[in-house]
Structure formats: structure tokens, C-alpha cells
Length: 170
Image 1 (tube, rainbow, N blue to C red):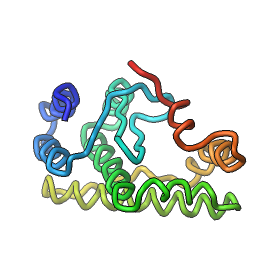
Image 2: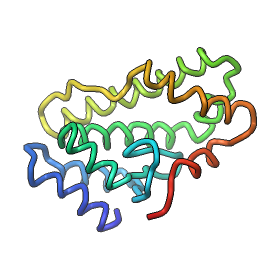
Image 3: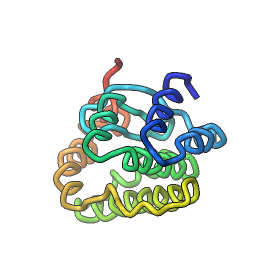
Image 4: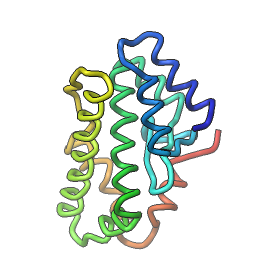
């Protein structure tokens, strides 16, 4: 893991009762690549190759929701990454190939619910306390995903190009 990323994650340990050291150890043990990058739409996003963290977005999110949420957010993204690692990037491509938007949204919600459950389970395993929140809100995803689905589904944009559009180098 990049020293700057490790330092950034561990910086939340100072004001928290959570064990961010265990989180870093979990990331290292599982060889999960994390890259700092600017993201226009969220504090974190995951591809088949790497988890992207927007430090400014994460700090803003932490101010609004606290370090528990940041811990969960990182675990949520790790859940996506490990699933992509297991099933490959075709998991995403097949999802975007679904012909009807409501069916596509059901599949998106299935993936998001998986990542939420993974995050909650790992939160408990690493800290011994339950995290009762979640990231997934169907109404929010329905609004956010419709334009992305249309662009990718109708061949105007592939998933990798979509990631390039929402990220920028710092």
C-alpha cells in the first residue's frame, strides 16, 4: 500500500474508537490496491483493478457523517473490489448489457446490497461493534444510474471511459 494512502487512512484513528490499523492490515493482507484520485461524483469508486479514493471527498464525508462511516465506506468499496476480483470485470459489463433499465437497477441494487453486507460484517470482525448504516438507497441510485446506464448501454460510453469521465488526476 502506498505510504500516503496508509497515512491518510490511519489519520482517522486519532479521533476514533475504531481500529483503523486493523483496516490497513486487512487491506495489505488482501493485496487491495488503492489509488488517490479526484472523483466528481463520490468519495470513492471501485474498478476491477483498483479502489479510487478522493481524499477531499472522504474528508468532507467524514465531517458530515463521522469516522465510522468512512471505515464502513472503505469496507463497502473493498466488498465491490473483492467481488470483481473473484468474478472479473465481466460482472460489470454483463450488468450494463441488461436490456431493460428496471432489471439493470435491480442488479445494481443486488451488488450494492452485497457491498453493504460485506462492509457491516467486516466492520464487526475488525472492531467488535456493529455498524448499522448502509450506503445503498434505491431512489438515489435510480436517479444517478439512469444517465450512466443509457450512455453505456447505448454504446456511447464503455465502463472504463465512464470511470475516466468521473475521475481526474490530482
